[in-house]
Image (cartoon, rainbow over all chains, first blue to last red; front, side):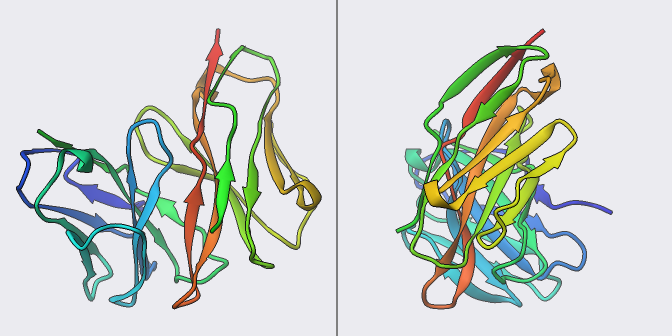
Length: 114
Length: 118
């Protein structure tokens, strides 16, 4: 079975631009979470979606937004990019958004903002 | 707020040595889950283990073992007879309640980079 897939693998943008990152969860998983991992640090939670609804949001500005589609895939959008947005963006999927569910991660999208 | 501390930034060992990665956590939840993930150079986080707060039994899986001690809020990870392929960054994580929805997100430590030399 295919794992979590993310696209693109790498992305280079300039300050002020907008970016869209995409994620497809493991087949049968209905929850998707997004994390930001800055170099040398652990991942930081951005959003969690379940059944197309936002179920949680981390401490990120409104420039960050996301959505989940009927097929459970998800997009993360970042507007007005800043240099500090350069990071590895990880998507994780789980069966549901419950307390017992293990999150399985994709390979990530490495975003560089110049 | 919940917190995970991995005090060891980087560890270097020679192949076949045993190595223990430390993890200390803080939480006010009475029910919580702890995880270990491995991140090889490719960047993908690989799930290793999940432990709930009610189960303090140690677990062994091949060369890997985990020691969960609720009294000291620690969840340490030991690799026995390390191999070069074990070289990676290892993250300890705690499931966190999102107060408004009750859903869970993961709070990660800063990771421990393990280098296994041949």
